[in-house]
Image (cartoon, rainbow, N blue to C red):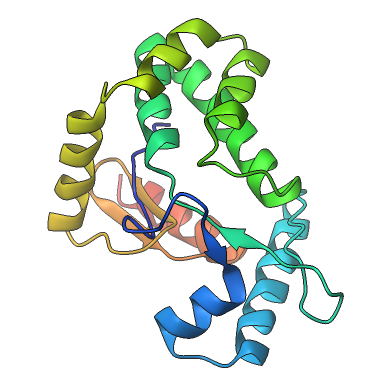
Amino acid sequence: MRFQPFELNPRMAAEGQDITEHLVEKYRITPTQAQANRDNIRARGEQVGFTFNLASDAGGGRSRIYNTFDAHRLLHWAEEQGLAEQKALKQALFTAYFTDGQSPASHDVLVQLVEQVGLDAARAREILATDAYAAEVREREQFYQSHGINSVPAIIINQKHLISGGQPVEVFEQALRDIAAQG
């Protein structure tokens, strides 16, 4: 399993944006629809044992959405260290953002997560202080966009089968059965 870069909001400012405001603007939906979408994501996460703490407007909390480019640069570097390292960092990023509400744009958060998964924090700081891996990440993003990937998640199996969007577990199960039956 390899994680490829994909920025939902490549022009997002470093401080991010309120998630409801962002979803209403980007998808031209109502705040109520945005909340229903978050509730659906939370329920799907629960089905697979992942906790999404996406603040609800009704509870007075606010979630933010951030630019993830620097996180993708570190994930690219982590893959060079090994697929297990990349996966560990990706999972730490998911938990930090979706469960704990931390900013994946914060260099302090990113270095803390790198250290947490046993990677070299000093090297991560060096990467973040430069444009290291920027060209590689942009090239990978452009490659997948040019091949029709325009949302996440996008799961590519055996380099040729695409499962796009946040699908229920049953969709993945059936797709894997169909692919296996094809030989």
